[in-house]
Image 1 (tube, rainbow, N blue to C red):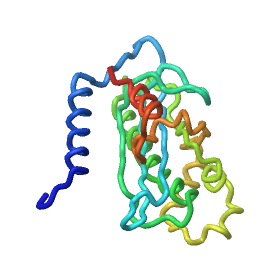
Image 2 (image 1 turned 60 degrees about the vertical axis):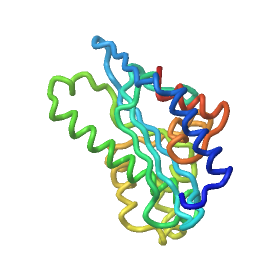
Image 3 (image 1 turned 45 degrees about the vertical axis):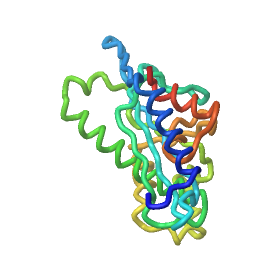
Length: 205
């Protein structure tokens, strides 16, 4: 602030333009009360995106949807919960960064389900509440296969509660292609068509 350059002025002008062009948008919710509702989550992370501490960013988003989302579909509703935050420790691999992001998403899923149970009438409308989509097949394998343990001892024990909830059938991690990963916008810079996919995925209108 004490010595701004032309680059800083360009950045602030870009910010004003973004605020001006998006100020009329809002989240749009469309739920048919006669249909069952599904709780659908998406989780993602970058790897070492923080250039100073080389920490990764975890991001997730949860929707109420009328129909279960197939592999090549995007949830057609508005989000009810979202999150974007630097991880506490640097990840040694992209797989570990994704795995650490799962912890945050699963915690949110468990909280939402616990809250739903307190709303006894609303709870009857929930058809499926354990699906979380991810675009990392290696991290899914790590979550489901204990044989990976010998190569992942450096991952903090707290993250292995992920495996516990999978074994208990509380959570179902499913693969979705990266180009359909809505949570991308919470973990990294998006430009052009990818930003438009993220914007539409949030159901902003």
